[in-house]
Image (cartoon, rainbow, N blue to C red; front, side, top):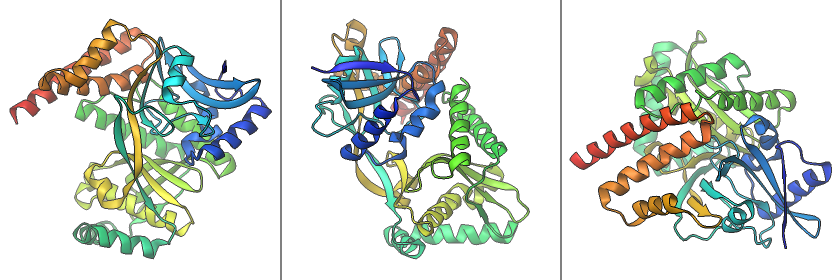
Length: 376
C-alpha cells in the first residue's frame, strides 16, 4: 500500500529533501528540471503541489505537479520540458499509478520515467555531448553537416565585418536582459498567433526566481547568455536552465535587424563552445527534431507525450481520444493542433475569462493551420 501526502513546493522536510536527492540519483534523472531547487523556484506557480508517496512511512517517490481541476500537469508546465517521478526504478510508480493515486487526468509532454506506452507518443530528446572540448565539438559539427557548419562560420565573418567582434556574454546577470528576452518572445508569439505564455505573469516570475538562485550560489538556475556587437548592442540572447553539468537551452530570441547573420544560431554555437570549454557534459535542446536541432545535436533517447487517466475518463475525454486516434484525418489534424495549444492554455491561464479568450484564439489559429495544410 502506498500513502500519498501533498505538500507545497519548497516545503519538503530536511529528511524528505535528503530522500529526494537519493531517489533522484537511484532513478537516473540527471537533468536540472529534477533538481529540488527548480521545485523551490516554482513555489509561486498557481496550483503547484508535490505528491510524496510513502510505503510504511518511508518516502519511495515524489512527483511535482500542478492541478487544474481534474487535470494534472507537471509543475511549471508549459515551461518544463522534461518531467517524471523521483523514485527508484523498482518503486512501481509509473505514470498510470501516479494518475490513479492522485485521482485525475495526467497530461505530459516530455515524460522521462516509467509509463505504459499505450496511447502515448514517443518524441526524440535532442542533445550534444560536449565533454571533449570546443575543438572536438567543432570537428563533430563539421562532420555531421559540413555545408551548414561552413555557412555558420561564413555568417560569423559577415557579422564581424558589419558590427565588429561578435562578443559572447556567457553569464549575463542583468535582469533587464531577461526582460528583453521575454519581451521579444511575446512579440514572436503575437506574430505567429501562438499563445503568449508570459501574459499570465507567473511564468516570467519563475524565470526571474531561477535567475536569482543562480546569482546567489552560481551553481544552479537560469543562465542568460547574449551575443553582442562590438559596441554592446544585443543581437541575440538566450535563457537556459543550468546545473553546471547540463546546459538546457530554453528561451532563445534575436533582434530581427540582425537576421541575415543568423544571430540565434551564432549564439547557440558560441554557447556550445563555451560549455565545452567550461567542462559541461551536455547541451540539451529539448524534445523534437526541428531542422536547426538536427544540425547541432543528435537523438539521445525518447520521452513520452500523452494523457493517462486516473479512473473513468468521462464522455468528453473519451470523445477527444477517439478524435485523436481513429477519427477522420482532417479532424485528427485539427484535434491535435487544438490539443497542443490547449495544453499551454490550461497550464498558463487560471482565470476563466483568460482561458476562454485563449481557447477561442487557439481554435481560430488551428483551423487556419488545418485548412492551409489540407489545401497544400
